[in-house]
Length: 268
Image 1: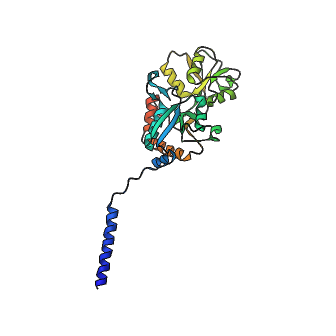
Image 2: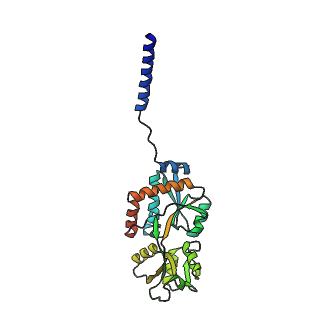
Image 3: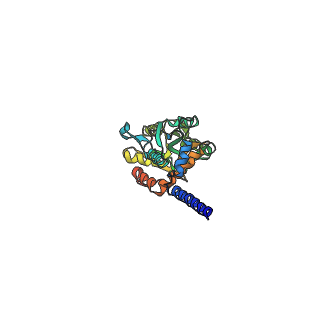
């Protein structure tokens, strides 16, 4: 009987100890996105490339103030969801993919259009902008009403951009520029026949500059999809960003940012 009592007492102590252990508060588990981001970002910082001269997507308030824009604020919201700091590196468009390849930053937030050529080399997030490309011409131009009409005409484009490739495919002679601001200035000065760009860029510009004297002549039959882009060895971070974007869509953040910069949800 004594042995039985000892065994029972020992069992009771063990059960009490187990119960005491289970009563301890469990360590807070990080969300999957934060864990994936932490694995991909050793220093807990997301370094993002953007132009800083591409309103309303990436620009400085009043020309020299805080960096902002639709892409910039989407990137900030993603970093917040991932629980990491964010650092922007302002880079000219024509050097931006070389910088990504060299590892100077983890991703690009600058209206990068998803296309077959880029998909063969890079990994993309889910799109956070959906918008067609458009041909922009002077208001009095009646010769260009379709992409076929660009054959033999002169456009101004960033050579490494999706729009530059489209202009060349349409038969245009392309004058290289760094971005939209230079292209539209050449168009307003009458030095080129047209330029191609994202519809949202053009609509924002004409809203800010009603005296501009340019108009949209035609648009692509299908809307383009713009997303964050990563090197193919950074799949973990791309998946984490996808998770953050899904949360931002669900909680209305993407729609709110679209309303702020465009007056509409441009994420779908």
